[in-house]
Amino acid sequence: MNARRKKFLSYYRPYWRLLLADMICALILSATALALPLCIRIITKDILEKPGPDALNQIFAMGALMLALIAVYTLCDMFVGYQGHVMGALMERDMRSELFEHYQKLSFGFYDEQKVGQLMTRLTNDSFDMSELYHHGPEDIVISTLNFIGALIILVNINRELTFIVLIFVPIMAAYAFVFNRQMKRAMRISKDRIGDINTQVEDTLAGIRTVKSFSNEAVETQKFATENDRLVESRRQEIRSETYFFEGLIGFTQLLTLVVVVFGAVSIVQATLDLADLLTFLLYVGILIEPIKRFGNFTRLYQEGMAGFERFMEVLEVAPDIKDAADAVELAQVQGHVSFKNVTFKYKPGVEDVLQKLSLEIKAGEFVALVGASGVGKTTLCSLIPRFYEVQAGRSCSTA
Ligand SMILES: Nc1ncnc2c1ncn2[C@@H]1O[C@H](COP(=O)(O)OP(=O)(O)OP(=O)(O)O)[C@@H](O)[C@H]1O
Ligand SMILES: [Mg+2]
Image 1 (cartoon, protein in one colour):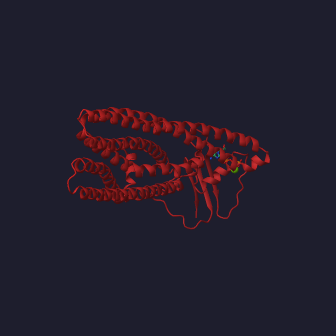
Image 2 (image 1 turned 120 degrees about the vertical axis):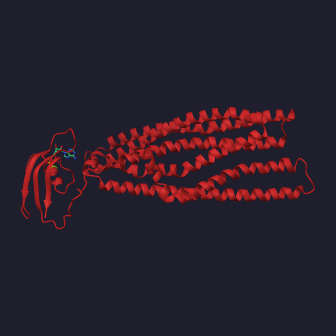
Image 3 (image 1 turned 90 degrees about the vertical axis):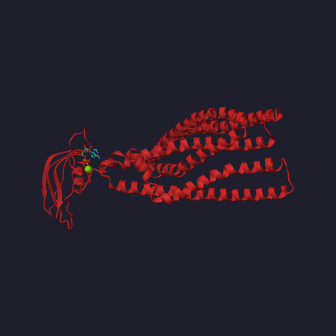
């Protein structure tokens, strides 16, 4: 397991009890969903086909059992819905706190390179995507796998030929779901980027609002904003289109499958290889079998989005703060104002010219010194080195007691 994956899973650690309870509820959800059609089958087949003298009692007993199953299902569903989302939100909080603390450790050098809007997006939007994955991911995997396998086993036991027909549909539907899900994902990514572009545009205009107004430049800014806004509508249109294909297409397939099962099932009934009660049960399980395909489609999207968010999150978290205290660093308790530079060489980033070269300077406590020079000569830079906002490449700069 690579380090990032480990890190991803590590956020579950404080909430493993909640996760376990969530998974148990998902198991129960799956089991009750599979048991309900079986109960219906007992009524329609075992009780109604040869009704005995206590048929009514048996029907009421089955009714009570189904009521209990539904109650359990609803309770588990509520638990997963509520506690699962809360768990996701708690994990999201932990990640946000960690990132925020990390932001505060990074030096000016980092902030010179980054856009504030982007850093804010990582702290808010991206972590929300991850929270959804953290919560829905395990539950989707458990429920869809169990429902699919369980329904399939029951279908085979009811009627093999009909199950075979259903199985022809499954890969076609899965391929369809996969293709349109990918399209949907791509369109979503573009939309997200464009929302970022809009944010950047707004940040630009609002940060410079005084300049904009001084030069009566509102019309130009409005025009620039309108362009970005229209681009977003275009990508939203693509997103909605692929969403429509995905969901409506799957519904169409489901209806087609139902139709095929009904026709073939009816033919089998005429040929006396199937009875009505089995066809009814079969149709109920077909519904359960299709659900995991949709759920799985949804999961792949959550996974892609959540993982993309996590990668962006880790990219920042893995930036090591370039200013670190030495192992033998001494706390500077009382500052008198003695500033001393010895052979200081500094540049802002690799590959650019040095701003300061071998600069030595001594300013005693209480002394006044004026820094004079043309714009860009390095006055502000020199001042930034005194509180160690940047790390020098060579020499020593210190402000001592
Ligand atoms: N954050 C930064 N990242 C990269 N290069 C920078 C950064 N800040 C300043 N520089 C560059 O470092 C050099 C020194 O800039 P500095 O701001 O220290 O000059 P200055 O003497 O304060 O100028 P001014 O009189 O205009 O305030 C300039 O070439 C400038 O372009
Ligand atoms: Mg300056």
